[in-house]
Length: 371
Ligand code: 9MR
Image 1 (cartoon, rainbow, N blue to C red):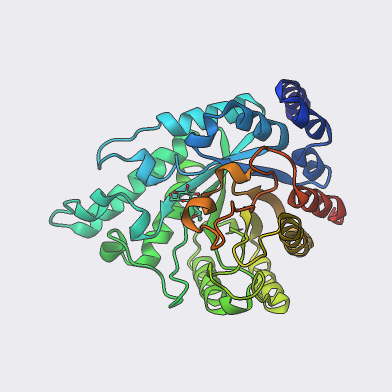
Image 2 (image 1 turned 30 degrees about the vertical axis):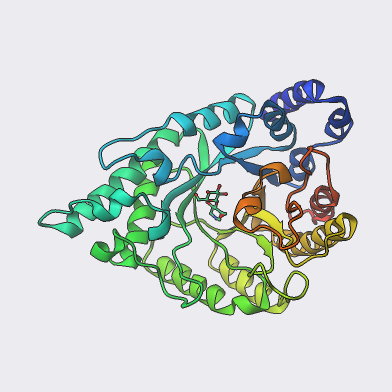
């Protein structure tokens, strides 16, 4: 039923596209190609790009899942300690569901001081700060998870809890009162209670790069600890911002260590956890200016990566962090040294499909049927 509806709606969206896009949209969508292999494909939308009707149509035509880019974070939902503002998140969720798409929730807690609203640090935690911190956190997670429990079946409960340079859990205004481990546990337990059927995910940006061993080891320690403590967690979100860790890396997209990466993923699935590719894009700063060369390298890198990820039956979700180069977060935060526009997404700035789009489709097509 959902499939039929989505097909009809995607067809309607395709008709409304500019002629040069209509042909591309008439090809099987990434969502359809993924679905044929028992997988879900989707992308992120933030309110800014959501307001572009052509971009909405591109997303509706390609995606089976949408995740709000910022609108479900504390910074967006919580102007202060007492208020919730769901207006922007609701717009995206309502649009996605009324177009037959599923929604992922991101994120019930971004366990990083930098990305929490300022008021959380300035809040008066009163005579029993531990109790107040727990109340604040539980109330937030429960309110958001409960609101969307009928429309969101997978939540990033905690995002980026680890400092990749030290391998230690981060500290925040909440964790200073609760302890970092307990903060994360409380968020997951509250999410399970409020949305009992939802998949609960820990999301982070450890990668297959050879220089990322410390981060991978720290994530494993966190997950193992959670499993030992009986914390309700169902999956690991592998963000998959591919490419060099640092914008000024001298060579290519960085050295990868496939063996270490497989060993890491084996441990994760060995704990019974799902693997989700949650934020795929390719940071292309170290690649040459020439577009054809650059797009090829981006596509080849992503294809090799996805082939590896999709060889795991536990990996059933692939999300891009934006479909088009026009709206990529990387343009503003990591500009290319040569000043040319970045090309990290499957569609270019004019919404034309790029080799990366074919690489994603190819990886879905080549995925073995895992039964
Ligand atoms: O792409 C997002 C950008 O628009 C926001 O300004 C930023 C801060 O809220 O977050 C970006 O998304 C991040 C995601 O939430 C978590 N993983 C890394 C993503 C890219 O920075």
